[in-house]
Length: 82
Length: 373
Ligand SMILES: Cc1cc2nc3c(=O)[nH]c(=O)nc-3n(C[C@H](O)[C@H](O)[C@H](O)COP(=O)(O)OP(=O)(O)OC[C@H]3O[C@@H](n4cnc5c(N)ncnc54)[C@H](O)[C@@H]3O)c2cc1C
Ligand code: FES
Image (cartoon, rainbow over the protein chains, first blue to last red):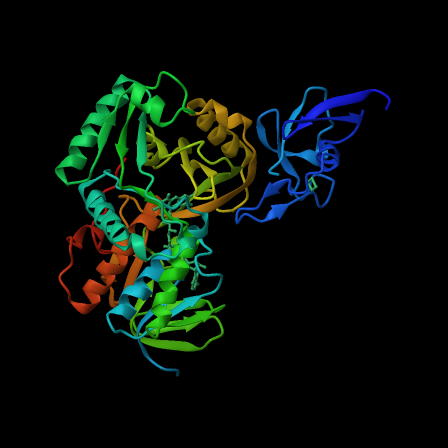
């Protein structure tokens, strides 16, 4: 991998190529439930372009970030509702 | 001419729905005319705070009576009404406002409303996301919050179960004590007609002293535990009082979902519903002065609504002097969710000649209104 980026998803380290979006890193980490709906249903990315808000995760402690819109950075701590 | 009803109500907001429920429960035949979705007017725009307010003796009497009615029914509401007794914190910024906290506590104590004074440390513990160095607060633990459109729908459902009829998608064109003339030209005859069309009431009963007062609200994504009480700055009173200037005040409330409602603004003379970016910015800036951490949260939606304001800040409840069979139930300004249940009781008490729990005179449409600032 050229210029791998090291981050963690739900506490598990993962390396991804530079330019990878957080949504992809979460999926690569094997997580399928990104968050829960207000009634507790599983949710995951739908539109991939920042419109549907289904892909929200917490990034570095900040909740409700649209993971499909945020490029991975070294040391990032991502928490999805696995 | 169609069937005649005992009571015909124009408007299916929370006030019309509460009146329908109360009249149907008393055994009267009821029809409600509502052009849009039930609770789709100011009722859908409001915050749903059930709150005792002490602007005037008549306002305390009405809000306290109505809150008692809400509290007594808390157990019966379905989950979507989202009744939560979180309690209000009236937040004091400085020593001057702390003096107001003490005055307010004494007023509430005198009428049997539970209230306790919090010092700066207790306030910081109760609401860690407020800015440090606030002076304190008055906690009113039995104030609550509901999701108003579902509360309205529930009340109307109860009326339907007792035989009331809803003319959905139909609009009143003209009201008189004899009945409601619909836009399509047909006539719904009735013994008593109630104008419960909120801020639209003057278009059906010209000459009544009701003006539109626009408000903005914002709702955030879900942040459970970020805020625990309904938070209102004490300076709110100054803001809500002004009959002329546009104003904003810090007002943040948690929804059962963990979402936060952020308000509030007040504007006269703004007749259109679009978002005013300038007012919205002022409102959010005010909120952030009290709660800096709000800046990091995501807002998902903002909207506006129209309060029905009267010169003396009290609603119009009861018969019109010039047409005693035409009742008004409007003018509830920023308190119509709170006071809907008491309004319905006072309407039914008057038309059935029952003895009301509180005097009705301060709210009668024919009263002399002292403009009050
Ligand atoms: C931003 C904001 C925040 C608020 N926060 C609170 C709060 O925290 N606590 C509180 O107690 N109150 C609050 N309020 C006030 C509260 O929302 C209102 O006082 C209350 O909803 C009024 O209810 P209503 O049934 O009289 O009016 P609406 O809900 O406006 O109902 C009137 C109905 O009449 C219908 N109508 C209109 N024209 C006609 C016609 N020609 N024929 C038949 N029907 C017609 C409309 O479609 C509408 O459904 C707030 C208001 C706003 C705007
Ligand atoms: S997938 Fe739709 S906003 Fe991210």
